[in-house]
Amino acid sequence: MKIISSLIFTVLFISCLMVEAQNVDNGFSDQTFYFTAWGDVNKGANNSKASEQEQRTRLKRLADAGITDLLPNASTERLKELIPLAKEYGIRVHAWLWMMNIGGLKEAQKHPEWYSVNALGQNCTDYDPYVSYYNFLSPFSEGAREFIKSRVKEKAEIPGIASVHFDYIRYVDVILGADLQKKYKHNGGPLVQDRILDEYDFGYHPNARKKYKEIFGIDPMELEDRKENPAWQQFRMNSITSLVNECVELCHEKGVATSAAVFPFPQLAREYVRQDWGHWNLDTFFPMAYKKDHQGNVGWVGFATQEGVRDLEEGQDLITGILTGHYGDNYNDFENAIIKAHDNGAKGISFFTAGSLDDRHIAIIKKYHKKYNGK
Image (spheres, rainbow, N blue to C red):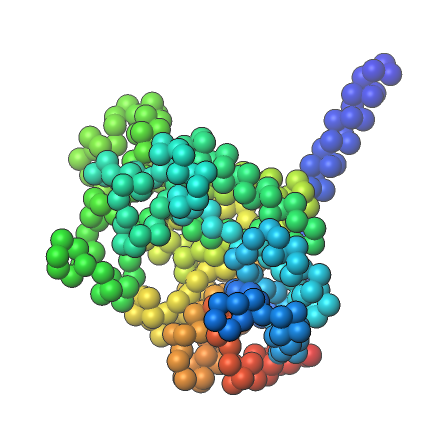
């Protein structure tokens, strides 16, 4: 009887630990609306590192405006240096981490079987879709998955980190935004993606084809409608989703929140990059509502926000991301983007990047921080 009681106590204790580990505060609950920014404050002149005093001056400027969170794409060493410095100004630091597009790393290059494969059988080690730094790994490669999770684990173990912030957690763009297409060539002419082109249709890793055939009885290459087949599309998206959720669990076990830079809203994300973020167990979503990439206006930012908020589960938050450079000197539109994000249900807004915010941007941010948060 004592043995049974001990077993029951042990099971209950472990269950409590699991629940405690999974209930992680994302840090966006103390005020009505948050202002955050991607980027760091350590860039000096001529690619040098800014002095500590310069960094403090920049942090104070951001904090005085109401910015509470920074998301730098930085090394573990740099994050450990920045976290206590930023904390002095009430700014939390997140670990912005590239996930799938890391084939340029030396460790990945030792494993060509880790890379994503397109419908022509081209591996991202041999073929660069769009740009040379597009070196995506495949979520169907167990080796790649473990490598990605090890990188997430390293960031989650940094003392004081606010969240591990996933980026490039998707496939290569099947379709680029309309304005982005104008920047690229295809077979010597302009790139026109009015249909799915095989060289940009990724997810055909040998493991993916094998697993799909085991379930559905057919190699996806043999599907008559493989480019548009809903099951084949969803099957590939599910592989990214399962990787995300495993990484979320890993972070939560360490008491660390998770966030991600995702495409503007769920339908667009599924269609353009096979990213089904509406089914992720993430804590905070940062949809990149970069209006100019999609021939949008400020109203489009509000629309994207509303669509994303609609798919949130209880306990999840959404911070609308905007690209400051898309607004140029149109400060009215910049201001209206903040309003649209707020009025359509976002928990905050994030600026790409912190270094792009000039004094007029800062004044506008300060104005709406006071309006929405009374500070």
